[in-house]
Length: 248
Image (cartoon, rainbow, N blue to C red; front, top):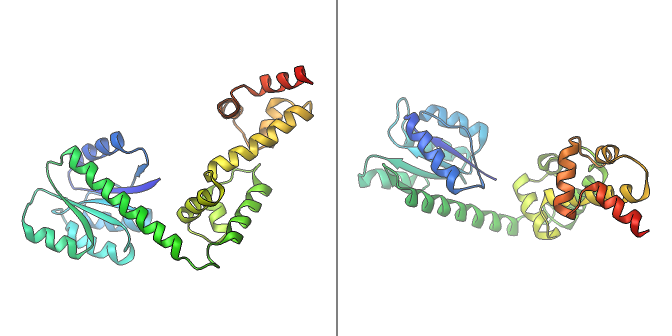
């Protein structure tokens, strides 16, 4: 998921932008909404957004002033300026501070969508170059092997991407992308596959209840376990067990 922050002193404008974004983008998590430049700086430090939608004219600190400060500690964040002012000078100053696009109010959905896609493409291109240029000691076969070993030893626990990333000393986003590149499946799907394979072994080889098996392979919500099992095996855990018994 990409993190996006909306900065605008008008509550209705923030709400409108949020609705447009949630309707068009399912891979964006909107958090840290801010009503002025000072809040934007604080929330940017806390949430570290990948993309910022920034109004120019706001009380206390303007959007451009906030952007100037934010870019000092988040140089790779992609900022899109939104303003009711169409002066060329604003655009020139915005570009100077690393802004990648410039939209006028009222924002048209098609223009917003194009700007966000532009930002996402820029992020993906940067991440691809970053992965390609990382030193071998930072991201290598050994890194993935260490991550896999950790998952294999702890899949019965509530494993999070951040936990594994910290264990192998790698940025979570880089680990997620590199993991899929090397393993052919996402981090989450790998854990799901591992849990289900072990669940199937227990269903076939033991008399343990489905609840016990679900708990043993890392699911505390039995209904969710059954849902995931059915989605991947096209049958419930009970029917899977029965079909094996009938064929034995």
